[in-house]
Amino acid sequence: MAYNIAVLPGDGIGPEVMAQALRVLKVVEEKFGFSCNLTEGLIGGAGYDAAGHPLPEETKEICLKSDAVFLGSIGGPKWENLPPELTPELGGLLALRKLLNLYANIRPAVIYEELKEMSPLSERILTDKVDFVTVRELAYGVYFGQPKMLEEDEAFDTMRYRKENVEQIARAAFDIAMKRDKRVTSVDKANVLSSSKLWRRVVEEVAKEYPEVTLNHQYVDNAAMQLMLNPLQYDVILTTNLFGDILSDESAAICGSLGMLPSASYGESISLYEPSGGSAPDIAGKNIANPIAQILSLAMMLESSFNEDAAAKAIRDAVDKAVTGGQRTGDIACGGKSITCSQMGDILCQYIKEA
Ligand SMILES: NC(=O)C1=CN([C@@H]2O[C@H](COP(=O)(O)OP(=O)(O)OC[C@H]3O[C@@H](n4cnc5c(N)ncnc54)[C@H](O)[C@@H]3O)[C@@H](O)[C@H]2O)C=CC1
Ligand SMILES: CC(C)CC(=O)C(=O)O
Ligand SMILES: [Mg+2]
Image (cartoon, rainbow, N blue to C red; front, side, top):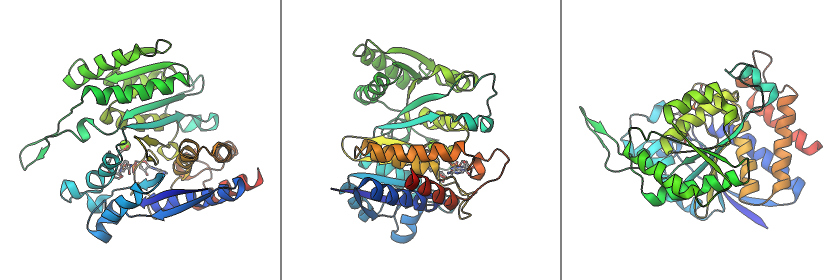
């Protein structure tokens, strides 16, 4: 049995962290006796430079024929002044999410005891393990709503949700909560935004299907503050595309680094796995990025798309061992000695082989 994976390294640190994740994949394939057919495609600035479009037709075909898509990250200053539809963000990543109808983006935030000193939060707040998941609506909202317009002196976007869009993501969040601590916090701006008033009403209707789950609501401004003051209160955060984008970066900071936060995006059939962060142009090309978010995204793929639970566990165990054993890239080095991106790859491969 071979799994077909579309591999899209993208821009900036994308190819660097992807290279380490693919080394780890090779090791777990050998150890756990499965195989993957990898087909590489161009996306983002790399796609624009080589084929004149951030999501070339060939890449679309590769993705649509795959069992899962494994993505690095896209974007960078070189491409930010292109017409909006040709930017890596809109024309590449968002177009791919739409193509695959990826409506649910799952970003688990877990803090390692050893990384608490990298968190901006004090010990007074981190009295227990931060362990929550952001369930972000990914296919609608203000990133996609029409009309949108950009002119010299005026610009606008549209934050639009239909009832069925909210039902879909709310069910995804409640299903996840049923496997966790059965608590959902829905984050919106229902004191101001019409789309949030609809959101809140529909979330409350869906909640009736899940009587075991406790639902509460927070306005996004309060949620941004509550995350800092008391992240332990959360189990599942259910929120919109824009708010989830922002709050999940905040959750990464709480856990020590964006380089630690993986993600999975689910639609009707083909799922996509990518780190929660971007192409990090400030550190790209230096072999210093943290590959763990990419590698933990691989673990999510092996588990969710291919039921290779043992391989996923082996990867997570290796990451645990590296982090707890003090193997750190610069972003999580707590001012101490740091290793490179590829050295982190070496260590994780070695730990998996030895286990
Ligand atoms: N999914 C994607 O492909 C995303 C792409 N972007 C794009 O990435 C570009 C840069 O955006 P920024 O706002 O700077 O966000 P970013 O997420 O690329 O970087 C923010 C900060 O986090 C650090 N960081 C991120 N990942 C890291 C890793 N693995 N190891 C160590 N440090 C890491 C960066 O060095 C930077 O200081 C933009 O073009 C943006 O549109 C941004 C977010 C997501
Ligand atoms: C192009 C952006 C919407 C990507 C992003 O920031 C994200 O998915 O977290
Ligand atoms: Mg983001």
